[in-house]
Amino acid sequence: MENEAEQQIINELRHIRNEMEIIQNDIRQLKKEQHLIDQSKVSWEFLKMVQSFLLGFFGVAMLMILLGVLMIIMRWLGIY
Image (cartoon, rainbow, N blue to C red; front, side, top):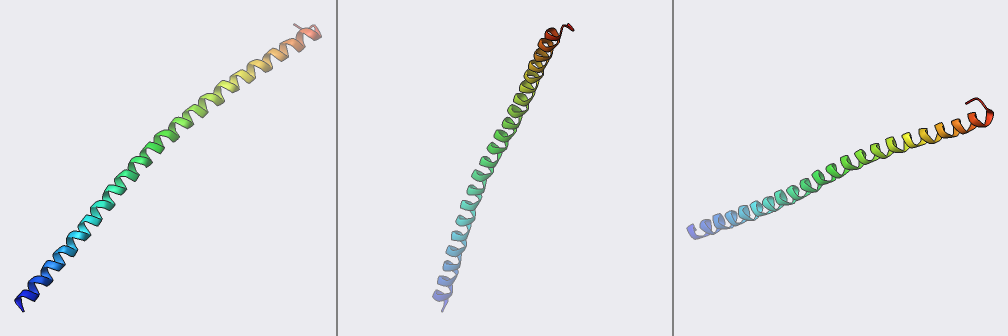
């Protein structure tokens, strides 16, 4: 009877240990996923920064082109 109770306790402890290992593996997996999420956030912020720069750069370039076209038209009309 005591041997049976001891065996049951040992089995319960093994079960608890297995559950703890599963939880530890889940925690490791979550840490890896969190790291990937952090990396993707940095990448997304960088892409937004590059997008803002390119929009500004091409916006200024477009204004310069329009200004040049306007000056050509004004010279052609003899205004400037």
